[in-house]
Image (cartoon, rainbow, N blue to C red; front, top):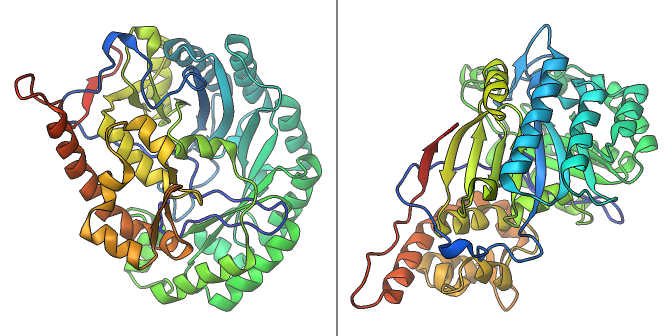
Length: 459
């Protein structure tokens, strides 16, 4: 997964929009003790009545035609895929998790991968029909599918639209054939442009384009030209990702062996500034906003992640869930148990606050006081992080802003967010423990442990 400091999303004026980073949600499994209980089954503070039984849905299709040189996602290159079995598994797990979560409304749906555009449109339709049958789906719900240019012909895209897809995320990644070969992509720049043109016809105003910068041998000048060309062609949403070298990938080995060289950090910073000049903020991906605002989401499919309260099991603790990674193992578990959940972690209040910092600060608006206090009524943003000397320095340097609106990054701070976060995440548990200690009666029970409880799956 890409979690770069400059994986920012800025958009071209008028209707161009952006997302901050990859759609796959962050999963944290601390394996510590105790959970965050909700006495008497009361509504958790971080869920108001309007969102109590709402969730978004992420569906993972794990198969690809080839593995890109930079990718360490949960994906599999298989010469033959049992499409009927995958359809049945995705439908069954969707039914189970909707029942377990007692979700009454799905607010957005995202088919990611892998390459979900390799799935049969009828598989997509079956999942969507299941959701509509089991729970409420607004008539204008955002339903996104990721597609590669080579699996995004006009006829196939039309079938996906007929199946219920309303938004397309096209993995262009580069408009330079040399760089596409280095990245291991199976399309050319011209094929990407053809696919983009067809996508715009079918999904006008709802076509997102992913592109990577910081590629081996890339210059600031070539990046600027490439981005200008893309902006002229894309009418909605541009997602920028800074290339991250992931250990174990082919690209990592090539750079390690000095076959390829990455741009210097100063060049990458300049590329980021170039993107800022060209792009402006605009519309956003509603599905990703749900992640960044700490809302519930269900994860269906091999390796998918979720965050929700399993009300249907009589639980009142939010859990972080991870589904079994390998498709064959996942299918066996779904057939046996109705779902392939491999790991369940009860999230504490501190877990949720930490995720709010990590994800919320990637939004332009940051974290509002209202949202923070919903999760932490007894600990303000100022008390949580603002009194740290290091954070005060970030505020003085105008990398962070803490005012009557809440906590957010400046434009300069957004580019350095991965540098700022460790300080915030170190300070938060210290402040949280102090607030817990201060709220304890002089004689009474010991304070709740800060960590999470890991639970075996299928129990």
